[in-house]
Length: 183
Image (cartoon, rainbow, N blue to C red; front, side, top):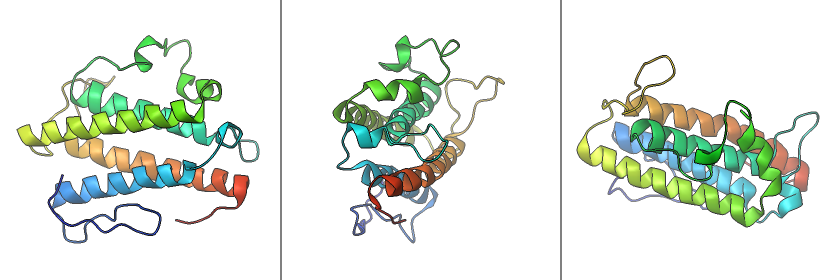
């Protein structure tokens, strides 16, 4: 990543650099959103990770598992060209397209958090490797369904958007569980 000093906010989240280059800024925002999800899910038991809001079926546990899958998909599978990692490699995604969301109810908080943390760590390693060998313009090794190969820049912006969107969901769910609010 960057050699810049990182400021950490009161929730323990690293603030994105105010004067970083394009790479440091994108990675800074992605790490900020990753830390936001960790904050929203911290200290919750299995029942809380299964809680929903209104008619929605979204859960914090489902968010953790879904975002672990998304991390593996974009950084390991698409960008780096690796086979899917366990447990995602054993899923019939055609038969169960929402497996990541639905199967989370069967996992413990430790399993969900561990899976997400391990996948994020692997994504960080793969990002470091990719950036050591090229810049943000480098193309992914695998194509998307339409045959296009996104740049690393596109993947990073997409991941910031993915976390930003789901952190909004996490805010609502966490507030419904224990009243905890914040960014």
